[in-house]
Image (cartoon, rainbow, N blue to C red; front, side):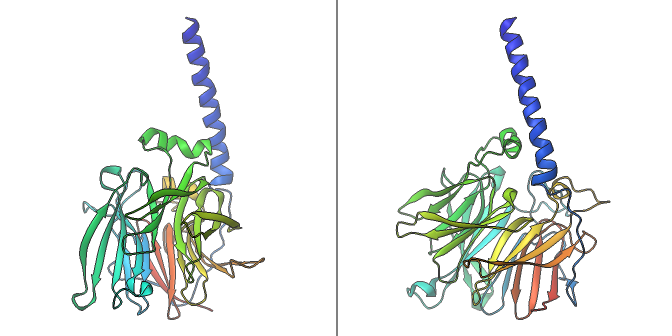
Length: 335
């Protein structure tokens, strides 16, 4: 009887703790209190043929864009009756940067078959406009991969957006505010955790000079700047407040500016009420390594035009905005 009483009290205490955390998450972490003001760009229109999301977008130097579409992931709504896919996030590596070939392009894709994590590597065959499968990478440290940034033909940095792999524990984890998510470096020779302390490590990208990494700690509403050391370990440089739940990060290869696809209200994004859909927000960070980075809202919508933006990237005076599970938008930029 005594053991039963202790167990009952423990369960009650846990329920109270989760309830308190839920209230905190509801208001402060999810930003459910935000009043979103529409901020449109000129000449916006939906990209034809994209009906089931463009969760990530990466653009080559010649303007060719790769889009991940048709994502179906547990807990997320889907507008498609198609079985869909679990390929969701991209990284591009230009082999020419390492001066070991004539400009080959490799596409790294995060895949989640049966809820697990693996990375697929493809080579882009430009003449055929096709992808050639190279290999699949799995590792115990790559257990909840959200995003990757490639630094070699078989090497990359990856974010894990959860510590636990059990479905129930993964659900509870954000409510406990556990800073246990991390960044992993992978190469055929070395696999190691190189940075930690994230509430939910989401998008990741690299500076044009390849000296710094940027990680979106989405539940803290911050972009974390990390410096790459000679041993591939990362040192913390700074954190930049963005005031939104920012998902994927794209970096302008000329200016070094960061373009972020963000969720202005995380609660709406999770529960998705068709009568009150989640909005979209695009944020730009200029001079992120300076003492006073400039953080600017470039675009915002209450969900009437585009639902749940997850990525934004610019090219040639145009801005492409992708979403987790709905459409994609292209607009003229006012720079």
